[in-house]
Length: 87
Image 1 (cartoon, helix red, strand yellow):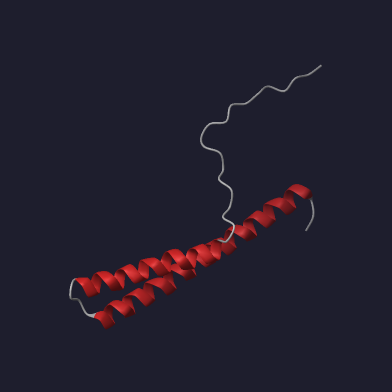
Image 2 (cartoon, rainbow, N blue to C red):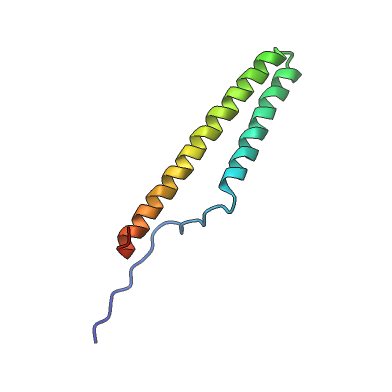
């Protein structure tokens, strides 16, 4: 009777993926863009410039995050196909 040795798991368990990653991304970065505009308005800064910066931030941040989410999904599919032997 061969017994496999038990292995300790160091570190925290892998958190489950979010249920709505794209929606969550848009909401978080949208809120941050609104905060940028509100801070500019509260401090007397240029509102149009703040709107432009907030829009650029929102587009760049959501674009990058969407790219990374899709890249991770592709990598996960590749890993699962390697493990199952299916293309």
